[in-house]
Length: 386
Image (cartoon, rainbow, N blue to C red; front, side):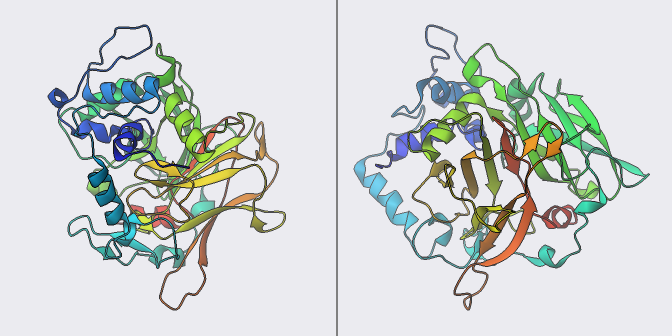
């Protein structure tokens, strides 16, 4: 399959719900207005709105508003950078490297922190929707799109999409059964009282139809949402998914094929114990009945330059997401019917000739719904302690 040019990559990346709000960091006056809907003359009110509308209604457009269209020379330079052995976190195929994280200050490769995988597993202490401890603490919870730099209007831009969205929260590793808390967003962040000692949250983000159908919020279930330390004042965050973003991601994973909405979709992130993105990691779906990786109709891809790329065979630290489309379903109502596990593996040191398995978590997979896993067992508790 021929890869799109860098201009196409930049534009279509804006449509992926995990990353498209990076457009928020560009100056609004540098962007060209975009047609928001076929047959409509509405002009987007913000730079984010413009970027999303461009990608959502145009599919893959060979332009990026406010950016220089790359030449063949710049495309070649980008390819050379991706293959630069001194920048291993850009590479996503070839010989499996030792896992690394990127130092955001020096841009150098660093050793990941895997200390939390030796910690006790406290995840089972809290059951779905129930409190494991009497004492509670108040936290801030928000919806977002990924690691974004602060900006004066960032909250308002995100609120453009999250206004009216309803989220069910669970104090444990399942979203089956009755939620512990339900919140509807009418502001950027909402307060939630969480039992002390809760290692992580799970969430059901309910679907919400929009006037522009492509920008409707689709239902998703998210697991392993880290609870930050109260001393930092940070908020717990879940990611929402836009309908056209999902369609684009599925199309790329399936290399032009169609998503089967009777099947499940899965998105997982490769991160170390400090929540840093990891290069060289591999994820796979394990059938609990055979303890072997899943085979069949499901297709998967790692992200590269914010887009699912089926040619990638491991994660890169720039965009560590792993996507699976047309995965089997293992839920019926509030009942789990089969065991499927997400497995994280990779080479941890030079002496590892084969990937070492060091993280697994049980999954809940629903028909037509995106399951997103933020962390594997014991990772969330370690993040909270930083």
